[in-house]
Image: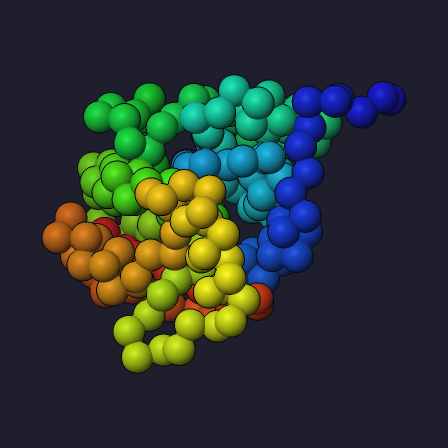
Length: 202
């Protein structure tokens, strides 16, 4: 069968999907709907849906090319628990979703304006039930923790591409989440100087 040319490939996905999966095994509920915000290529959604057959995964992204890629990967996988991708902009005042039992957001916060982080947290607080997890993955700045050289270079490259992008301070994200009704974050160090950050709805 010829491969769908709509499929995109994110090299980082191949490296980080299994470490992320190991954390998600301790975080996700036994059943329900998992909303992935900023699904990108769609490779994560396929990998996680295959690993959690009792969960339903809803991928999303604001970019039409990403949506096409997600659906191309989903079509090839033929997983019954992976829904068609939906257009969702984290900054939008309304999301096309009414509820979720868990929300995932991988490598978005540093490649988007701060308003996207604010929107993500605000909507997650509206959609999640008590105890529901908001899982974030990516590089962060942390108070009293020296910034890794590779992350400093990455941060500089992001800000050169767009002054509104860049590594966020974990404490600022946690403060915003706290104000929205989430508890303190559970933080797990990940490969390549990334973090898994889990907030649970209070």
